[in-house]
Length: 143
Image 1 (cartoon, rainbow, N blue to C red):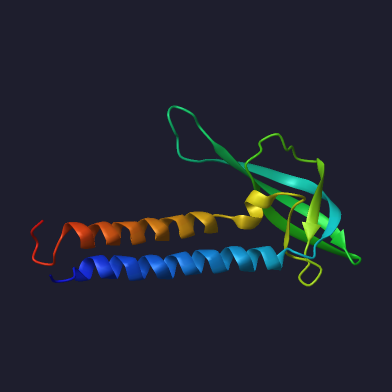
Image 2 (cartoon, rainbow, N blue to C red):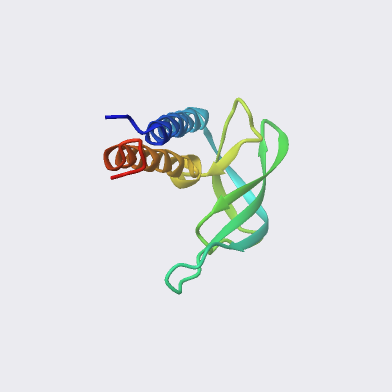
């Protein structure tokens, strides 16, 4: 029995993508681990429509915020899936003391993780597809 090279390639690429996704999640978690809570003022709210799903529209709000940290004024754009923020609102954010330009909404784990979990999931799907290809095809193109 010949091993299907395409299936092996899918598995290898899938493993690389899973490793990248997991390392990105770990890195992002460490990056915002020792944050300091700070009050920020929203100076702009931009709402972007995401893909429509089953007739529902979802939006991501991009909040431009300004905040003081160590007597210096900083600006950042923070994504949020919540749409009740308004220009002029004062919100609590977390600031990375090692890089004060880096901030996120206080307690917003979804933003911290980003889409890196989806990357790891996609890699797992490629691994599964590779296994299916190896099992279903013997390398000759026949079942």
